[in-house]
Image (tube, one colour):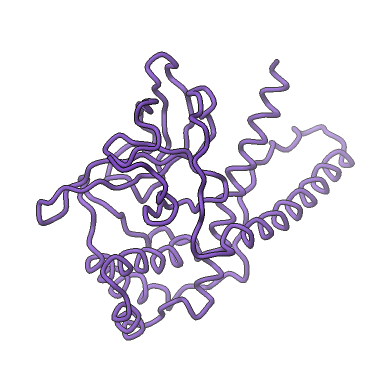
Length: 270
């Protein structure tokens, strides 16, 4: 019924908000730790210790410390353009020339602010006691929201590697609200083609027969001007396959950004 649907939607909205807040807490903590490179020299020294594959991931993490941890998305940089992945050198240039200089004039919040989905306040004419009760309930809900998010953050990022077991192939109608990753073919600047994962959330099921859903992709996987929500086929034959069109369901404890080496190490190669 309508009331049950509202409860489900509210719970789903709170869970999505909490996932985003957990990520904010994580990168806010990293920004204030020794893991953060705050000068160009620190960037150069840090990169010198890493392999090329590690450099790409490290630079992305540094950028997200500013864009997500400090809540300044103008300091973010897209990971791809026209399906071509940016190199670690290009992202490092953005970090050194844009993100680090810009952060000098920013006020660093002591704690990121959660963005909880809230009901509208009562219309004029409601008793003051009603408004006071609603405000009190909201304050308690916010405190509980923050406390729970901090606990989940500690659990989620406790280790550097995430071990993921393969779950049973889910039905298409069970994917609503789930985080998924799908493999696409990208072309590198040198012309070489490679497969890479994109991560997003299933926000609607279009067709059970054709196994078609609508996915809201995370911003770092989108090309300029590309719509956030896109129609995708999640074919059962492509589940758990490491090839173009392959896809997998991510557990709640998985990091929001797909790491092919760790999270997807179990996916079957084609």
